[in-house]
Figure (cartoon, helix red, strand yellow):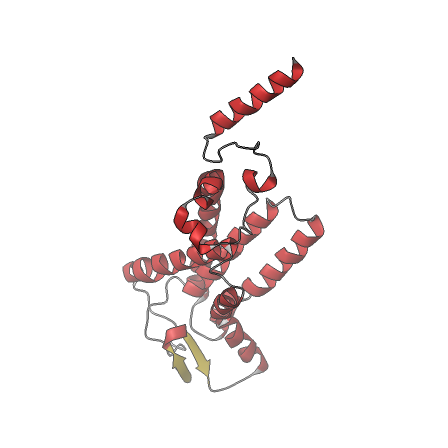
Length: 226
């Protein structure tokens, strides 16, 4: 039975019988919101990487809270003081989804040293991995709800990475040239484009398609060999 106070906006139950472990679990239950605040402090409106991370988080929330939970309609454990549905765990889906995407981006980011990637990956895991079990610890979710939520997040994070890799990255130069994007003065800390890396020849249009660019490069090589 409920033996605490519900914080509905954050979907967290604070038990009256406080222990060190419980306090730690409560802190990790608030972690997604703390990370969101951190994104804002780091000027998320200027950082392309944090904007993409935020888009993924918002997408997971909308899918999980507005669609999946309404379809499943599974109650939370009796120990929870929250009245909303609990299957699947939204905290778990968001934390694991964003974690998976960030790790995949980190693995493919060859501009960073291996040591830096390991350190950043370890930090990401330290922040995100304890969140799902913390939801069971404070009684707001069952292990099954947390497991399904984590699996949902894993799938969404992986699909988002594939989308970014195959759709967004090849068109990033073109997207950054849009007038309203330029007005935002975004900092491209997500992916080093061909224009930013200096691969484009002087006067070459970054809006060219990939076949046009390859043909242009082949022509330059052919002239140099003549």
